Length: 417
Ligand code: UD1
Image (tube, rainbow, N blue to C red; front, side):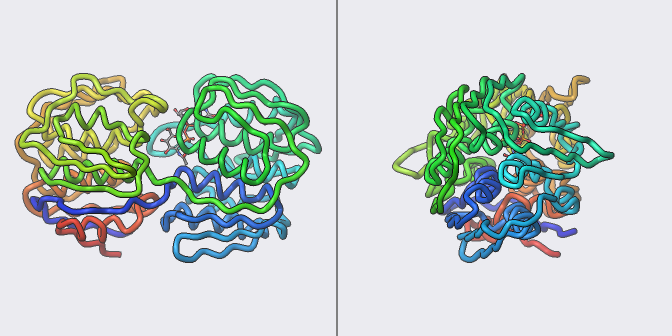
């Protein structure tokens, strides 16, 4: 367990280059299994989740090198279809290996990832889709064993545009006989990045970024080199660090239209865009947002809900935030209340009424999940006095050297193991 020590009240000011996307690199690393050859993947974030995905690849027999944000995978040596249960425990998104291992090894065994701080998080869409593609699924305790000699293309309609299920279906169907159509697919930029990676390998796939994706099965795939897209959630988190401390920041290496800039404008921040750069300058007052709802892309992302709640807790007026994607993504709120925030969670557990306060105070906090942890760091940057955030490495799962980056922007922050 590590902890962040933050002395609040310093304005964020400066320029920062944004690293590659966590949510892109994980499915891309899973996809590197598919070519039974070499994948060179640049701009990989150097975070815990990347290293967990690389450990999974090693564990199933791939050769893996990671240096200076580039991963080189040789998947020609894959020899196991079992995903190490300890690694699934470490990272719920390990479930993304279901589709690609099944495609190549004709069999995959993985433990059930179970719920987490955000709620139950079932994988029923993933399993139903694989069944529809022709896989046999045996559930043995908390183990899932899927097998299929030949998968066969079909039409799969998702009840909800699940990011992970869309990716798993894509990974499972690249070699499936015939055509697979995903209806109500997730439209996140990370799905487009996965499609681009697979196309470079020779896959026949189209439609990513829209709600219909069509994959026509191919016989084999070839070696590939690819650069992961920038992390839009990390980028927005740093923009908020300036907005909440009344500072200014220029972030570089971003795809500007991946970010919910409209919501930053609603809070009254000044924003200027140039190619792959966003400049944000805070105004004296943070404006409240009357109705901020999380929804699948292209709408406001659930992965920024907690960070916006921190920002709006200092707004001049009442904001209402509704979490529509996860049933209990609210563990940051009691911690913010310890700092003096006035936030009420309605009985549905997903509607938050935030009455902005003039100041937050330093406190002793516990970070219970990745984005919630980042939200607490943001609140601490703006608070009066010292905050200690006790963290079970959640923040390191998704933010590369967050304390060093914030320090370079003027924050007084230290990380201790
Ligand atoms: C991905 C992201 C995560 C983000 C989330 C929503 C990665 C590695 N993680 O997670 O950061 O918060 O998208 O944008 O990319 N659901 C089911 N059954 C299923 C699958 C999902 O009911 O089989 C539900 C989930 O419980 C949740 C909703 O669908 O309520 C969305 O989940 P999903 O889009 O699948 O999230 P992940 O892919 O796990």
